[in-house]
Image (cartoon, rainbow, N blue to C red; front, side, top):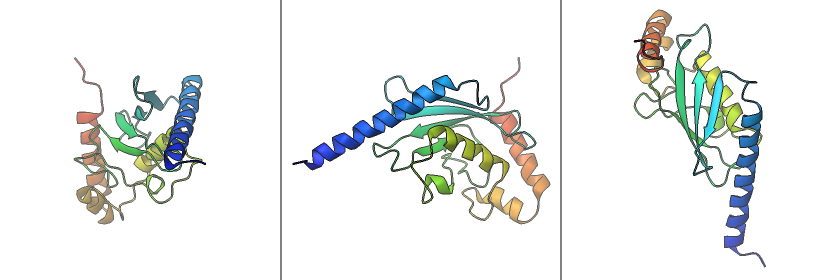
Length: 168
C-alpha cells in the first residue's frame, strides 16, 4: 500500500526527471534560441535563472533581462514562479518585486509548457503588453490613456539604465 510519503517522493522524482530532461534539451539547443540563455543552479535543480534579450522594435531592444525561476516540487503539474531580477518598466511586471502577470504562470498553466517556452511567452509579453491587467499602474495608465510615446520613453530609459551593459 502506498503512503502519502510515497506519493510525494514519487512526484518529487518525476519533477526532477522532467527538469533534468529540460536541462539536457537546453544544453543541446543553446544555439537554437539565441534570445534565451537558461541556466540551472549548480546545487538545486529547482532554481534556475534566465537571460532574455529584449524583443526587437520594442523599447526593450538591446537590453538583456535576468529572470529568476523557482520551480515547485509539483512541477510540471504546477507552474514555476518567475520574476524579473532586472528592473523593467512594463504594465505586467511589478516594478519593485519583478512579479509577472501572465496567465500561463497562473490559471492557464499546462504541463506541456517548459521553462524555455515560458521564457518565449515572457518575451512575447514584453512585445505585446496587456495594460488592462497591470501590476505597474503607471505603465498601464500611460498605455490605456494612449500615451504610447510616454510609455516607450520610460521603458527605453529603464532598459538603458538597468538592462544594457555599461560602457567604459
